Image (cartoon, rainbow over all chains, first blue to last red; front, side, top):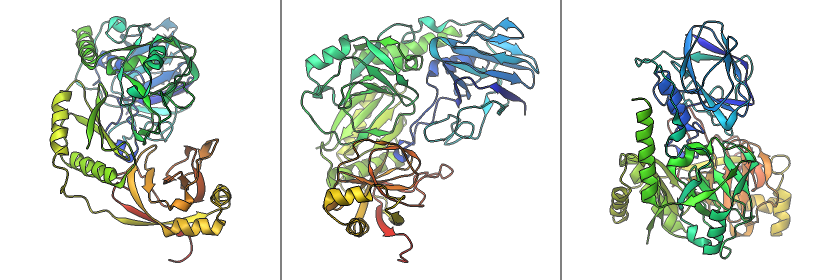
Length: 311
Length: 218
């Protein structure tokens, strides 16, 4: 088996695929790529299945040496990557020769970038997924972030050929930078007074430094319940907007706990989840209420536009 | 009467009660076991909790209204459904000292001696209501009322694996090192989670737990 050597890991780089849903009853959240659209596109560019494992880089990219000739694609935020002293364009497949080192720099325009290699990163699967769950040490390479010197085995390439063109996903519905995050009502939306919900949807929220794969904490005007109420701990999902007693919302993310006891004001829609993975501390974001029917229509339009990129 | 709520654009929440009751816990268990054994194709995950079951579906491959009708149909015939037979687990605990740093605090908050707290804890039989929060963490009902104590004012950033803890009317065990705000009264080597097993969580809703003083020879 050929391999990729980690020369420098960057700020926080993990092995991710599309996650392991199906084990919430054992307390295991799905994990998976923070920006699954970028991962899926990167994989399709190199001829992989969409769920094949790749490297998720955070804020600062790493450097990786190819032990054999290979095909790779960078997706997500721009990493200012270089290979043999030449700039590497994201969102298109590139060829590396044995001994080449791909050097990625600081990420621009988003928090995460994906290095998808043809054949994928081969690590032992945990519940049929390669995804790293950092908090619990499950999956990925020994359940942890990559370190310099790690050697990542590559899988066998599939039958599909790489897609030898650049794609531009910036216009995909739900993936356009700067748009509000659309949200639907949740089970406790009515626990908040109309005025409190209006403040939530009118406020430009600031992403705090506490922004990781578990959750994204926001700062702005505190949102209060209409009256104090206790919630019996219930199941929660990525994208749920929890409001703890202090009033500052937390958007649960891919490594969220499977159950939670804070009331949820709203939920980011499925079609806007990938963009949560691009958020960086100090970004400003807004939310916009949307109906369930409109949320579903947007997700379908996103899938169609994604397929159209490769037609 | 159970109600169905759209929890998001990819999940339905079945709420059996707004309060934590044994009856609601039983209904959660019945529906959860039924859906795990005979799952409509569009369901991708199930999150049982105290009085509700979150049903996550694939929004691209599921008509939520059809799934809601299917859930309503099953809710109508929950009574009398067969249940998996619950097991009884005996879990040895080293109480107090460095294993249970909050035992003294619990004693002082409840007006009991430390050994009275231990006696009350080992005297209870706990029901596993659900596993949540982190992999393998059991939420246990049945904490004797005289041990009900508020959670710690400042949560710990790291609670060691195996920590046996209580908070309010709840009891639980931290399977792995994690943050936590519950009062830690002891520690166990009992394995609650093993990712190499097909059913990775040792405990499941419907099981019962009794704690023992480690090394007491029972």
